[in-house]
Image 1: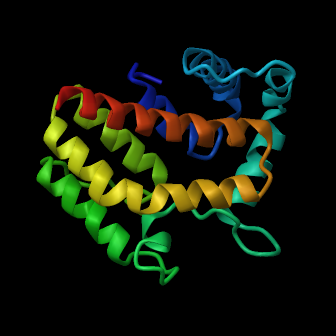
Image 2: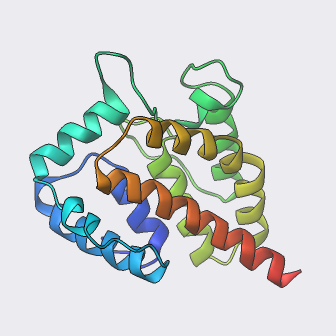
Length: 183
């Protein structure tokens, strides 16, 4: 994970887990938990599941499950309440990327995937584009992330994804707290 900001880690953690980086994912998630005051205790051992089990859990939660996808990681599913990809949430994300001067890269994922949006937040923080950052969070991310997190937690994910969802929410709240302190 080349970038050091936590949002780049969160972005990577919300992508399909690669066998070779799962150990690092567990380690960084544990460190972030400690930094944010999340007491893991016995759960820390449960964070570390096999790479194959983590991949299976990713598929179950975000890609395919017999009962339907419990927590689709796309803004367009939640914004506008139509449950369809490449709709309002996607268009909003693309508009923000354009405002920041970013061009999309070719990917198998839609641009409103949680991983892209978290990386974008990290990019805005690094570039000190705080006005655009706050607008993106208030006008876009907060319109869908709370429902996504609720659906993720309702799916009873393994501890890794449970803690990842909580940490992401806390990191977003930290930005909002810093914003209020700067006013």
